[in-house]
Length: 281
Image 1 (cartoon, rainbow, N blue to C red):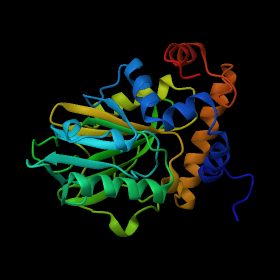
Image 2 (cartoon, one colour; image 1 turned 90 degrees about the vertical axis):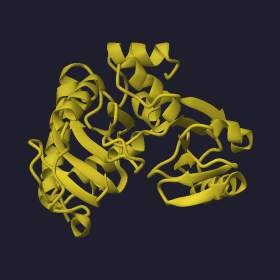
Image 3 (cartoon, rainbow, N blue to C red; image 1 turned 180 degrees about the vertical axis):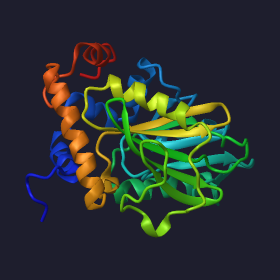
Image 4 (spheres, helix red, strand yellow; image 1 turned 30 degrees about the vertical axis):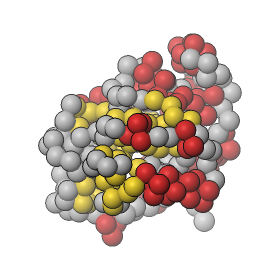
């Protein structure tokens, strides 16, 4: 068991998990709210963002263009589909590489909703294109931020399929997660500093000790996918990185407290104003 005197990121996140009802964290878990918050912060976002509502309201007319369909509030990409229309009311689903009719699609989404237990409220948005312009799913870059400082990032490549972790200067590092799946040939994104610049601006603006900014390198530049204040299984770092990340978490929290920002109770004026204006408080 880890000594109580040693910083621990997993312990910090376990504590934060009990604070899901606080305004900023709650806003991040709701895709409608987080989209509006990111929009207010000037982040590059997927286009054609639209609320569909209950699954029964979904029609083929919502899916005429390449579309990502997702629950308004879920976790670990549960219920997310990336749809490319094939004509004749059939779609190619990129994530599972399967073809679906409309009836098959809705049945699959309804079954996923019942299994995962999330609310029956759905959102559609632009299906992003990979940076090389191909039809493959876009790569994923998840950057762990403590304020404007990047501790590490997790990069998922879709072609070739592989994973890699990088430290704060984009050097490959073993953090103890996905070790059996890491691809040693995978390099940092070509636009790594541009991606980091966006993550820094978001991390600095939010009154949270930790935020993971999930970004996509696309054919029109970096796009923010979502914000993750509680990273699920992604916080199960090895001892070295658990302590390092825990120390950064505690330092950032102390900084917020020194500025009168008790993130577990109140939000600072600038973000509070944004949240209030958007009806998120």
